[in-house]
Image: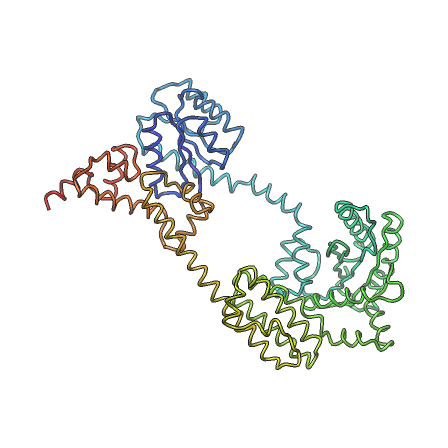
Length: 553
């Protein structure tokens, strides 16, 4: 929604134009008015103004001085000048300074409206101009590493992305990896940070580690490196030669593994950082989240001192299998690696995405069932669900109501030996109730908001009913309020204000006890002329003609 500011020291003109454009349905405008240039500057301190219609001759600060200040504060704003005189010098200076148009007040409302429409079109064109697009592209390029990291982190957290969507995202984010071929994952961990290091010191060193990895490895592989967290760097890579077999015995894999020792040495000598590195086996993109969890677990439970470790997933798994480690069996079965892909359940519940939540919940339950009678996995899952729902309910102060309706026994007293379906049914029913509760609560809140707005309009017809004022009343952004009201009621706020003014005007005119200019003030018009124009536009008769018609009945 564009913002229009009317500035004129003659109140009747400023009020008349304010009412004219407030009622204008041709383009959506948020209209403001000021009776002086300082008043206009005060309005501009709080909001961006797109178009200004101003008198060129005003006391204190002239329209030309206002234009000079506007070009400093908001250079894209279009300024339209109004004047009562044919003054060539003023017009020439106004255009020279960057004024959009110069209009005689005697030319009438239609001429002013046309100029505002043209200014609005120019503003919208400039918003979509090549310069802005080029600037956006440049900023996008700067943000690309962060955007790449964000998307790849989602994949590593278990987000399921179809191959065609993955292909499109890789292209858009300029990720130099093939979206349909197997991929390798490598993780480097900073074994120890110096206590004196600040956050910025660590961020710079992590960036340096990634630079060293790229420097040594990029000539031979397609590689993307990014920070996993404050102590881990991840790298996703594929051989440049697409014909090479993605096997751990391939020459590119051997080169990669051999170069990791050089990277460790460089980080130790140049950055005084000790790195532990683990290289994973090839993986399908769909399974890359499980691969990450497996590598992080192996890195945390490495061999020997677990310091400057350099190994592969295959080596560590072979070592654990030969030692008959119980955790090796667990890793092979994958029974505690799956919960990470369900971490988005919390966000889906909080955002009210019912179907997506239930689909992922059923996926979780199926995953646990497939693991068989595994007590550890069931305990982990039940505590995960208990925490998820407790956080949600506590933040919305729903625990007393849920305790009364459902009871909290399955949350507070977890017994893995108990029938598994008791828990799964409980959490499913609880989720359905919470989604229904949120939907009802949102509808009630929306209904209260509409009632509040409409009550305020009815009680304040004689005052400022701009979107800005209404937004302040309900503590919402004016543009958002306008969209929300229309979404809820099916009509715009300006339509409701107009209907309410007409109904009250008809009621007061029929009663015969007030003069027309008094009625105009009661319904929000500062002049009888503006009120008459408004009434005639809607009713096709003047207020006096309507009154006479009511008397004849």
